[in-house]
Image (cartoon, rainbow, N blue to C red; front, side, top):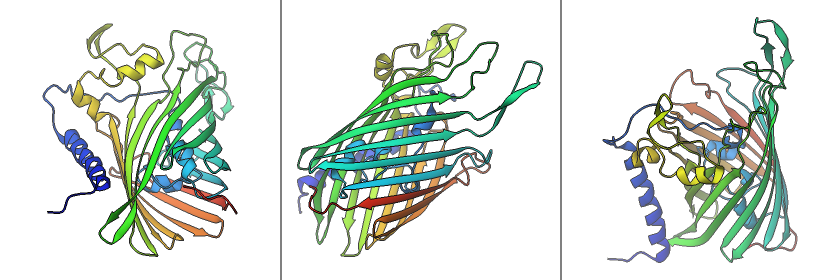
Length: 393
């Protein structure tokens, strides 16, 4: 019997963990309350995958090959990027099943400052379309264009030859009501700042005559203060602080053909709503806590106990095939528990690379008909510039 190498043992352990997680989600626990209890946050647009490449792989990307859009998935990946500098521009009409005037635009750019470090910035703009506000009598008081945006900056650096770390800062602005009175109360735009902390590791592996690399990544994103849309400071909402972790296995089948397989696990580090009878908590914990306490409580505060905590893990699985590093075909699947939002969809996409230009697109296929996410398309453009004298690790 041939023993596995340490690299193979690590890969086997990761994918065994994946199988156990799927099995845990498939079981029906005895102590699970079983009610629809999704976790809600302010500024959810921060959680939308902005680019077509990640969008084509079930929104997976915490450990995929780095590119200009790594800011969203795992900023630590920038240290491994093979280009000297690059720009990414992405656009996606959003919720096409409901309306045709909501869209997400995203621009990102990176620059290598030496052989060990990369800096990057991005702008995310979410346009919620035209909305007509009315007074209590139903009379129109004007048409407005609610919008949200976030500006990010990151620094990514090698810690060792195959391990990198990224630290990011983010300013978030959300203007949903344009200063209108809602329920008799004056409103205002919500502003906050947040941070990401991430790591990424990649090392070569070999399977008989097939070589490749195995990578894994962790990103804790949107660690920031709660926000409020009014002067009433007693009512503040969490932003989508999120833990993303997952592995990727890439195989170089020959000089022209390459395959990658990846899985991301996502869990919001935000308190779960407690089950109440009036003002009395029957099960769960009080969600009215600080950001730091909420992140800690998010691992054990679900009313249904451990099984409900497991159901709060969203799973993204994707694959990517490259021919001669010029043409790519991608596919993926996204899973969310039925009691935590019930988003389940397949994704497809393709990509082209020629010289310094890259074009990607993706298409989302929900499992349910008449889903607001159906017909979701994403389009992305990449412009990369090679470094004449810097070689990355």
